[in-house]
Image (tube, rainbow, N blue to C red; front, side, top):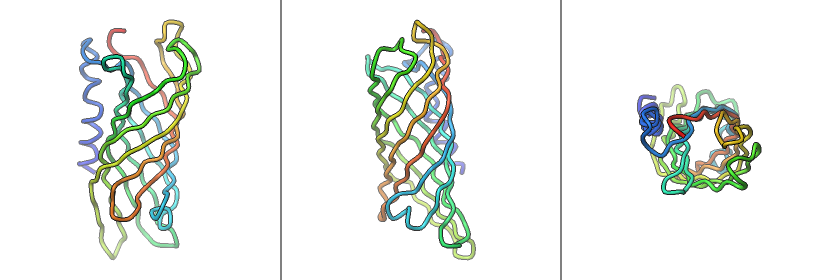
Length: 183
């Protein structure tokens, strides 16, 4: 858990600079939703929940997001215990339409690191932090005529963690981002 919180703090660290007018981060926010295990992970775990923390902006004109994710699923087949997922992923983002549009679809893809911890009472736990990649699509809703203001988002992703077995999951997230710093 401490390692997961550290990864989330690291993912959001650039936002602390923006309050002082520094850095490329334009929005920070959070979301929550359902997470569905996929691949061989989906054979042994059932759907659960997740939280997402995000810092979004542009670096040299290229839109990005740095996302921290933490989630939990339960085991299938009556097996006690849980699996927890936590990490950070840096994404490149392609927005469809101008920044001033009130409804703005986007696609994203990125890489990062995710810690997977599988706990079965009476049998112990196994944990590993591995590289991960993700890809997804979503929509931003809101903002003002100048492209600023609070924006709501809905995003679906596919995240694959490089573990010996296929550890993949599909989080569906609803949330909100707020502008930070000087625009």
